[in-house]
Amino acid sequence: MDWQSLDWEALDRLRETFLSDARPAGPYWHTITDLECYDLTYGERIGWKWDAVLAELRLRGWTPPAGATVLDWGCGSGVAGRRVAEFIGAGNLARLVLHDHSPLAGEFAEHRARKVFPALAVERASCRFLQESPIDVLVVSHVLNELDDAGRAALSGLVARARAVLWVEPGTHEVSRGLVPWREQALAAGFHAVAPCPHAAPCGLLAPGNERHWCHFFAAPPPEIFADSGWVKFGQRAGIDLRALPYGFLVLDRRAPALPEGASRILGEPRVYKGYAKIFNCTAGGVGELVLQQRADRDLFKSLKRAQGPLIYRWRCEGGRIVAAERLVGGPAAAS
Image 1 (cartoon, rainbow, N blue to C red):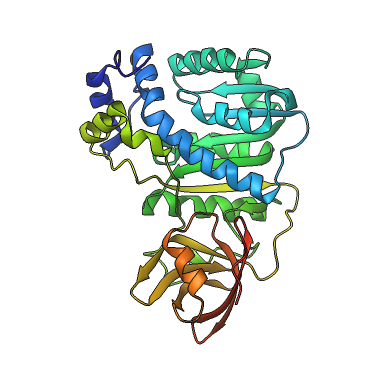
Image 2: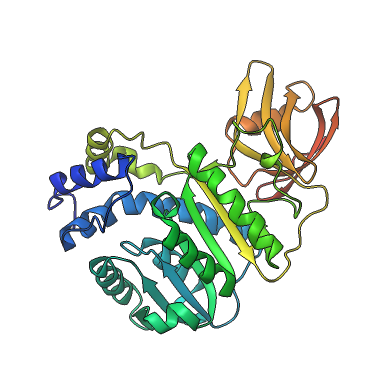
């Protein structure tokens, strides 16, 4: 599949389904062409979100359990499972297992994964696997707003059996906040939060007064797409700002990560004004807004204008104003 053979009408139908408030009554994949068109466009955009998450895990030094079996649950076209397999390295995986409620999607995802990783054992999940087999890494991508009660129960059972969970969702207010209860339940069941959380405390978004806030970030698409006529046409036809890739995510592990003491994370994007910037900040003590005056740290202020994640710092503050900062994950440290 390429831009010349793309079925734009199939994409239009999928877009209407994605934008509908109603939960689909069944699989929305009608043909293999649907999946091919999706994988080239919407699926690739989801892949860029996974690239951002996996790049952060690489910066944090996170690695999966050795010889991992990866389950991509609700795989769709399989883009998430392929990105994770590439991140881990096919030679370090025992197998990639795929599951979707659409047999057509499962077939497509299996075919694509076998083509990309010819030496990797790739298979579709059996009923027995879903019910009782060990899961080293559970991959979940863009499913939360489609789950009914049975789907939630099934996913909850898989999370309970997994050794690690990699989960990416759209960065909307509703869906991103929907991840928070899953985080709290997982921590209560013995998991540790690897990312995006800079701490192991209860999520500060649950505190009264924080209902309008949510944990989300922005992935950077490859710059070359803005000069690609196919991507430009897709963005215009789908009504998508190609620059905007908001996402929410959750990485859980049975093994405790080494979290920097006193770490804070900027949620969303810094809001930079003339002479000062505001950030919405997450710490073990909760979430809240901080202000950075340009004169307090000109280098840090400048870096926030073109901020790229993960934006994890150790702040020193006075009365809600940042007076010193140290970048803890990714990029050069900014200190004053």
